[in-house]
Image (tube, rainbow, N blue to C red; front, top):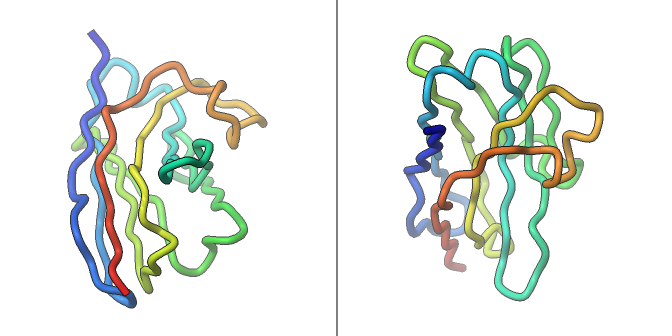
Length: 124
């Protein structure tokens, strides 16, 4: 059974930081790209960042560059999302996802496995 389990969400003040973690089962982790998406109430799921299986290549949503950083530890089977300079607009449920490498990494449909999500709330 493939499982992705997010953690690290919570309440933060504007300007603060949070680090999300996503623990993945071993069989998929080394072969798949890992992505982060988020979904705010009433909005569509939005691409945040993706990292290749090796960790050598990352892409961020243009609007989040400079504030959010994705990384992975293949020994711990964990992917991280460091979020700095948080804004109230960052409030959303954050999901990690795993899928085969693809040029369509910003599309949620490209990912085969999803975590349950972790809530991030940023107060002004």
